[in-house]
Amino acid sequence: MLSARSVCSLKNLVMLIFIVLIVLSVNVQLFPDNFYRHDAQRLISIVLLAFVLTHSAINKFSISNLLSISPNIRLKFFLLLAFAIASTSLSHYPRHAMIEMSIFASLCYLAMFSAGLLIENKEEFIKRIIYVVWASILLYMLAFYVGYITATLSKTALRWPQPNNGFTSIRLFNQYQLWSIGLITLPILAFNLKQTIKLWLTVALTCWWVILFYSASRGVLLAWLIGMLITAYSYKKLAWPFLRLQLTSITTGFLVYSALFNLLPYLLQQDIVTGTLLRQTVSGRTALWHVCFKIMEYHPFVGVGPLHYYWYTTIGTHPHNSLLQLGAEWGLPATFIMISLAGKGFYCWFKKFNYNSVSIQHKLECNLTVILFFTIITNAAYSLVDGVIVMPISQVLMFTIIGIMIGQYKYSETDEALNKASKCKVRFRPIFAGIVLVGLVWSTMPEIIQGLSGNPRGFTSGPNIVNTRIWVLTSRS
Image (cartoon, rainbow, N blue to C red; front, top):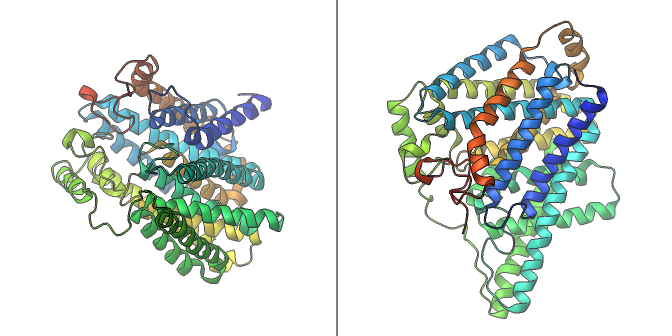
């Protein structure tokens, strides 16, 4: 077992890599210019997960390893693991399937790791996460608005991804934005900050909405609306401070967007191209979904294998729908188990954090509960029309939020869990973490070596440089 100092150093290293992923990889070209940002983000996320697994494997008495899980939920996880192994083994290319299987298993450890950090020092950990997200957003907006001003003064056209290309696709940016849109309101609502600072953060929130309107994502706005309605219904007047801030910021954001991207370009006779929310198409999603239904028809029990959707169609690497993707690749039984686990999670959440129990909490706890609920509902809705469960930054943020929710739920049960777990001589979770770590390294190493060696194929892992969605197709010449 590691010394306390070594454990602390390992935790700080994980947090440092998290900052590199969320702050730097979005705003800085960390790799040579001939490689895509997505590949850099994927590589950093794999390194992050590897260190999380290392922590879980060699420090079996950490709080994250000792959090109790009910026998019923544990049984479902074992069944899910059995179906995942069967699906991977029977897939066309098992090593590719192992990549995604090991990544999702690693992400579960990231959730438990986040839960453990919250339990150890709740307020400090929440502030760290929020400030990291704010730092990432402020740097992104700095580049964006400097680019906008430069384009306006020089009367040059402004087209996405200008003036910032931190993501290979505008929809990947939308995922990053939707995970953050609720979290960044917590300092305004609940932190003990000067009113001047809160005012500037509110202005920044408006500016963040301006970029959302510029990106013209109907799916994000629809998911946001669904999250707002369900949150309002679930927490009623307790959610009103958060809902009011969201409504104010979206309104001011739309007004500022209209001035910057419609009125001003018209007056200056300048070409600034943005998307439109009034598009009539669904971007070929129905065709992608149809492929999933066909796959589930012929492979209902174990699917075609994780990361294998691309083998059955040339029109996309994932179906832009989380449930259909899981059903087609992992099989219907595994998908139903995941849905039942999610349903059980929401049941337990509402049982502990219902209107009556939350109403007696202090301001920080109340707002944190509402924001976490809104964030997970909103992104769950968005995952039905986009690849929220596919992209590296979205995956890391998703399971970090899930971990924070687990930590929030388990916060008062820690002593009991530790006393119960300390009586066990051997823990399965740390042992399995070591197994997952081996699987993660083994399955991803060929592409990592290939990409870092300067191979013109880049990090691509597909046959004949077909993109498997883990990496981008190839390096740019």
